[in-house]
Length: 329
Length: 245
Image 1 (cartoon, helix red, strand yellow):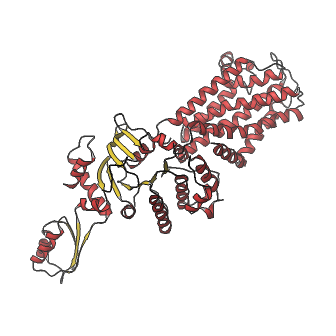
Image 2 (tube, rainbow over the protein chains, first blue to last red):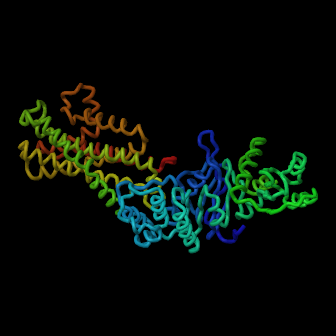
Image 3 (cartoon, each protein chain N blue to C red):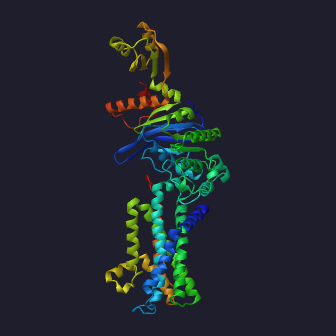
């Protein structure tokens, strides 16, 4: 982990939980984010991402016993001080006004607002500044939200599904603008469904599952945590039933797919699998051993937790370290 | 905050359909109701039809503009998430409420002035200059109370519930408060209730002026109490911990 616990955290969740009626949306989250980190928040729908962001921004208050602090103060105070810029998925725009007007409102409301032209330029809105916000495409609306989030000199940027509705070019432009923000020393927290974005952009990844922190580490660490690799090769001939059974029984193999002579496997111990493969007397061609993408790692982790969750309901308030152990065993 | 107030006003002025409807319709209603017997004396009142309804319709028009305009728009903005986005800025809670009242007042002022103009030019109302000024001022200032009520309703209700609740307040307050029919024509119990309603006090301000008196202190105090009540309700609802903010 890149965290440097000597500096004061930018964001600090302490046993923060939130219950809606009988639904425990967030279950005692304890985690700190440090200045300068770019953190991705991942989780399937209903994992508690939105609740986490709502608590972080002070739009909701945690249940008794939990606490959320931003820069050593309350979220509301931090927002009032202009230390937080946020781009919400659910954040609507003011109807009946022009792009320039709404952006200049945001610049004006921010205690350390930037000049309007500069914000429009950075968000790629200069060309459509005079357009009414009601008449924008989904991607253009997202750019306006980005402009609202970056209208002033904030220390923390919170982005909920920021690239939804953007095409590939816009998405690339967005992340390069985002990197520029991070390069200025800002802490960036974003929730996303696009795991390749988390893989490329984030230097720390948090995986939420059913209101609990399932994993916390770099993208590489998360992938290693899933502990599975892919082994692919081509045989000289289509394997018969006996050979197929032998392949499936190779050590470490958790899944096998056959397409003619092409074999694709998932293995929790790729070294042992490949060793045993040669021991069968086979000569596999085009052998490839690859790590999982973050996406597969994510699916592996969450479905594993799903199974464990079905076996035993764990007590509330477990901290991240026991969660991590639970995820890796 | 000044930028938001300015932007809300600009936006109201741009909404031509709503502006036209809100500004013109109270005057038309005034002509319709009081046009025939403009000079008829209303028994038990010191003023005649044209005077009574001039203030009543100015009040009714102002309420139309601020109550309906505010409640529906705010409910819509909450649903769209704009209020959530605003809550993530340094804007204080009262800033939003102030901006909404200001933009509503922009629409209500021309509506009031047009009713007074209709009174002077078409209905032949003659008053001293101070009375004109005082009637306009009372009608305008009183409309703030209903603008605050509109904000509170916009925060209280969502989606489909906004319109019925607004309409209930709108027609209920207007009728019971004596804006459509002078109070003495209403059943006793309605009149008794009506005397405590903001609409009654609102119209009474201007009608006292028309009769040549200063507005009653009791009416002004009642309106002020309602303003505080509605504005605090609006501010409390704004800060409430809800998903739709």
